[in-house]
Length: 240
Length: 240
DNA sequence: TACCGCAACTGGTATAGACAACTAAACAAC
DNA sequence: GTTGTTTAGTTGTCTATACCAGTTGCGGTA
Image (cartoon, rainbow over all chains, first blue to last red; front, top):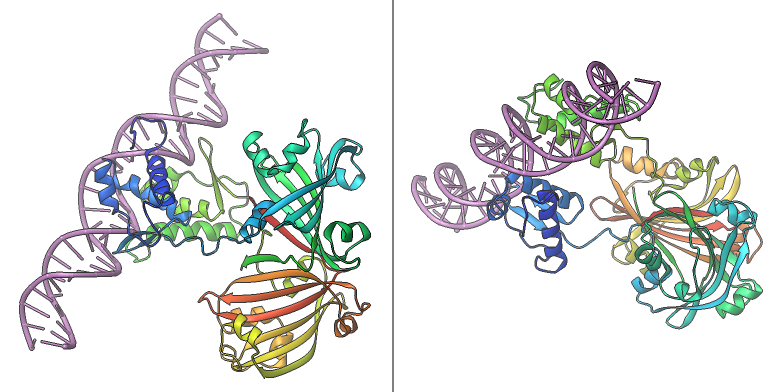
């Protein structure tokens, strides 16, 4: 259970123990967890160490304390979908839709001014340009043009892009996606867009531009997406 | 400085001391604060108590620790404009524009189904309906229809609405605005909208609907805004 | 001079113990 | 029955102490 001679701090080991217990459903929301003294005795550690573990979990919103009563598993994420960076696939799935992708173009070009500025690279540096039609329940949802610097992704294939790109970046390449800056503006569907999106030319669309950054501060993607106005609403939850 | 016999916890007193020192500029961002041992000795309290105070401030993002070096005042809000609930006036000012308002209609009506649902009140309950043209640098930026339940705001006048409504709610009424849920979708300017916004009919506009909640969970406003697509971009910063 | 190592600092982890504040339930008194 | 009171449990606060781990600078040695 807990290894006192491990270099991993005891409070952290206990933290993980409790966290996995919650995640595995051994402890369910609203349930009372063992008291601090019980945990201290059970694992033969100090109560203050138990408190440190529980404190962290409380700060992370996983547990809630009530003086005189005990510590409880917190209700699941009331305020979760606040504003987290999600991929198209993740976004669609959270809306109960099945995501899909049709790659239209896949090429290496040299960056124009706009792209080099967004990606913070030299102009005319080689970048991938991938255009895709994004589907939700097999129906077009968005038309998207993705720009990736070749310097960060030396070898990318269509197959890589077809599956979950964010997962590829995080799991395969081990990079840490940190944040993104995104702008939204309304527009009218152009010829090409209306064709790909299966709507009339001039229909209202949502033009989304996103630049995403790794934890080292480098931009790794610049995406321009055109969403169908009749199918897509952008939803945000904000705190004061 | 610190009153050990006060019912206010010592760690909290120290926390406030440090916080006000930062806010008053006695401690500036990047500056090294006294070590935990120094603070403990200075105020004749335990180092663990000092740590509890500092821990809280670190969690609040006011301080940062560096093992072996010391504890420093954090750089100001690098990630602040992440997704905070702001009023139109605050939004415009942050963009360097001068906000303005022209009230078009101000009336009490009975809630329709949509409004009663958003505001979580009974249908046909009395609500204010205020329509405004929002200006930025004296030029129309958005046309907005605001719905407020009369039960929460028994006496509101045009004057109240003209000045900063959020400030009125927070300062005058002492209510706490907590969060809002907002949707964005593209649309085409209708007759009325195009007239108010001084754009052509059929121009792309951004349709924003927002329901805002107090800290007790009650919705206190439902706003439907139509932003000019040629003047307004919605910007969000997202974390993974 | 250049380098190494030690000493003295920093925060990080962990202990054992004490008392306060609060809650719930059992119990006693009215 | 209702109202206090006690009691045993909970988390909250606080102390004193110890050692670990990372950083920095100083001084001695090569």
